[in-house]
Image (cartoon, rainbow, N blue to C red):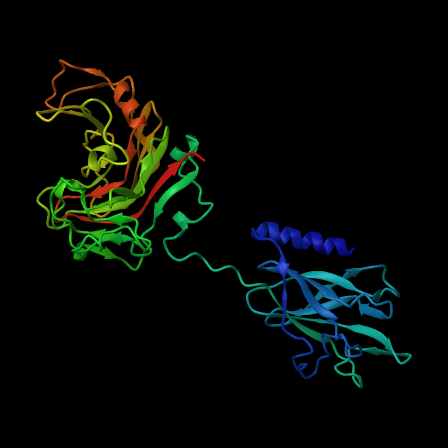
Length: 439
């Protein structure tokens, strides 16, 4: 019959979604036995082993054991537990009942518990000096009483700090990433700590001491980095940025060049990847709006880890989300010489990614598969560009339409940091940024 109590505890554990752990017993030889009750431990042995105890607990159920298993002990068939307002009978299970009243050695049952200790009382008789002594509170055992124990479930593990769950180990990827087999969280910032390197000096903008972003621009791009005052880390684990300059729509990036070496995070020549951001927009004081979540090949930005391939400079700039309503070009190919630059662009969609509304949280994502770009909003694909789609010059000329496949091939050979930006005066608040790769 004892196995039934274990099975019942297991069912409680399954329903509670937690595994059983050792209970906390609040009354032991180190504690004074409450007046009017017998001791929860054996007063006649040096070991002072517990006679009434909780053994295994979940957050809402405990297995109770009465008796230590000695052949010289008999356990009354029922225990009692305090509900908070009354004593509730708790039938025990064990070996065959003796005289329809006693279990020999030990008996058990399962009772509900909670965060606070719940009191349970059992009744044990044992032979000492050739006499039966029951419900003893001390070795003299001049009175017999229910033997009291307090049983408490182990404390639940603390919840993760606010905002950190999206970066925790074992976090499940969003559906678009999971469907593509991208289950490894390669980069994550939930902005629960200050992770933006910013300030007036190059040293302050270096990616050291846990910083994941820099406000520093690549050499040759010009423009003043946005001041530290433009960035505010909020108590709810989000980051709000109102850029003062926003040159080239860029207020922070995940890479920096130091002493000729590229450092930080970038997506290095991966066949598949998924980048996502959860954010919201406000107009602020801006006269134009262009929130941007995007990238550009590091060969063009930094000339690292290697210069752009080809006899001339050739590189790709993918835009994941740009403008309030995502009316972006989405994908640009550049072929540069010293005298000129030729650009081929593949346009995005306005109507299929309507503006989310002022100060409204949403997720923007970009999946690259090698042959497709899939643009997502709140994990739903709203636009797909295929390598067979035609692309065009910025002025809308159709004289040189050609498939996007060759641009996709160059993306496969590229290295892509994460860039986030906005027009000066816009207000962008970010909850998290994540990048998923194949295992």
